[in-house]
Length: 528
Image (tube, rainbow, N blue to C red; front, side):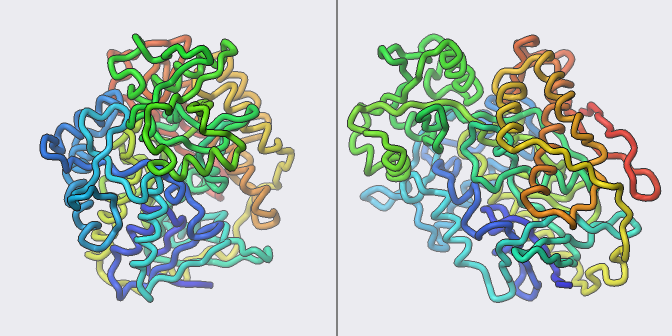
């Protein structure tokens, strides 16, 4: 049994920002199911959005954010985030974070889709995530211990319903109990639910499933952002081609050179991601390959070393001046419902980063706001915890000695099949018939019974599949419920935004518990 003041599950930028913000007298433990550097944050090619330009302003950043989010955003939280962004970046700069600068020593500010101003700060060209993760990891003090290869498979609740810790599985198959006053989920989203994705292999929705099983509320799960440009070779997506490539002038074209975004949106190739993704998807469905024409970008290899290396490793010759692309799952706008600090609807349990639904992204995240969100809310939660009374209880004496679970039902699909069916039925373009078909298929694996399965007898690979089924069901259920198209949720049978019925309406999913530990029917609610 391990004890800490703060237990952080996950190791991306939100997790590391929180850990580096916490007081040095707090005992902090970070658990990650793979390595410290294997996260979406580490893979992030895009930058951090902040209104630092002479003609820019946090309010303009806010306007762009809610426009991209199709006005589904939590307005006050979004405005606070854009206001905090410039000071946050300046603090990182003063601390030694190596953001890219010009010959005069001024920050280089880039342009990305749906932004009205150049406000994207990069580090290492297209290696921003890697550089910030490295910077933050170097700030971790001796009070912070990082434990790799720990698969967290259950949250521990006291008899009063307070989260007091988590159970983890070690590489040798043994289990460990981790108790803490503050349990933070920073596990990322659920990109690996789809066959086409930019996400790290570890991003399978674990934290979302853990929170749901424990009884926390989740919301906005229908809003999945599909990044328009993943490298597409031999029928497979190989990795992300940053939005910044289009920001530098690359154009989306067909085999015969037609510009596909002309006349589709006033911002053309820099339109909001859901519009660009849907446009590319339509061309691919008609059998036409889409390319990024990079021929007009000088010194492409120097400007985009990560993308260039990705192409080279995939056998693509950049001398043609074209990169074949396809859209794939990239970011979850929804997640575990939190307040403006990161507290969930379960006392003692917090969520930050992509695992959380703070409301700042609305229905479609604005480019380069994801790293910003993790930095802002990681710091905010850290500062709040720093102000709390010091405690050494860690829930001692409250850990359940035995938990009664139903017998498991282990007829599970292969992960590749789940990903393929999610892409086909609950992907970029949705409709009731396919969503209903997917609901029936997912429920054939007894989703509600899976919530009560004793997981300790199974290996992480099997548990991961269970978590993926639960999370896929949540996404599909929300997608069925929202009978309109908005942001990352596009229903071909309801192709327009329905502001009368759906503006600011949120779909909340929660497991209702009965006495004795079993659950009654899962509840879906619509709130404002």
